[in-house]
Image 1: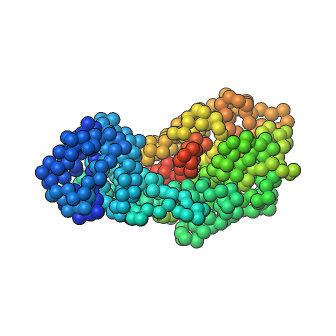
Image 2 (image 1 turned 90 degrees about the vertical axis):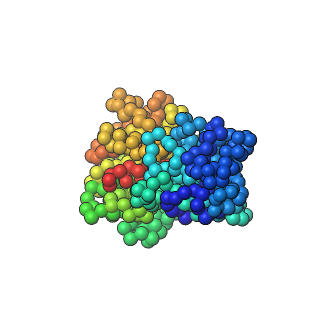
Image 3 (image 1 turned 180 degrees about the vertical axis):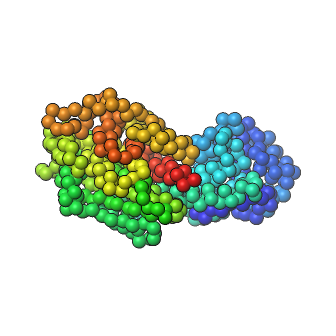
Length: 496
């Protein structure tokens, strides 16, 4: 999709379509009023007749509107103006995008930045418009023999902004949003690929290919022999049940002149999780291909950093494996030794994500990081606690927590903090090892983070449990690419 920003009157745009808003009940937005004036009341006559009420999700495509230079005008329902929110703004953009794409309009000028969203400026609206358009038009059809193709798909969008004074900062927002959208798309593609294609080796090859495409990005892959030498007994215990070899993917983006103390992102890369010996129920197990969405988000974020040429040093670490039942797989009651030297009693082999993450977190010490953020589809308990709207956030450093929470609010990829109190640590007590890998029924998301916290004593660390946000089920089944937007906003804020 080609995006650009400009400032100008809607009635003077020579375009295939101009997109303007209508509020409920039957009230024109500022740009729609300009067209209405130029057309001698053409729009107000239509809405007075009830052709469109202005309800959220409505749209009406008009041809040959008098007094305009465009071929069409698309009216989009915006709901009640005083009730507008970031979620509703996204609905407005998505409604317009679908109407244009399905209606054969190949280019359009969007006059939807004149909609007032409380606390949000024009650059935010430009950024959200681009992210929403790309999300709406995203399709994963690589594996279909017959693809759903529109005869005249939407290819070009010009975003109108109210004032020329905002042009420079809106162009910056456009550039950032396009880079983020690319990273989100990569994370979605990797997540949506089936486990027989997207193996640990496939993830590694993807990371290597991205390094070839970007000069500031380098990728190295640790094989099982390398991990054995480092003493990663916890990570390797998970891969023993699979014929696919484990990989530890390390991506280094050097965008700053001073490469010391990078921010390190760690993502769980379980390319398929059957649960191991503690096998999962068969219903919905196909969705366990999404257990690598944390790793996919790290890869997508590093790609976005390189695309944007962010002046920052960022390292991505993705421990990747499968978790399958086999004669050599972990058994409940086994004790393994992690890279840190701490021993772990495996009470449930389906709590494997923390077993690969803990060795990856210990590996991060060598980078002397300024901060480490891990993300993982780690616990079903997170979905019970927060549903599918917010990712859980737990951290050992309050300022880092606030940075991430604020970044999530800014870009509308939100997180919610859960406590990481010492009170919960005793749930991981074991009679036979330094700790157990599960903490019982209560507070599952918190005890999983407590487990990881034992490997993060030497740096500032935050954990994002994305089990409820990384993909959607049902009719809209597919990866979401979250939390790439949150991570990129966090990183961009560090530059400012």
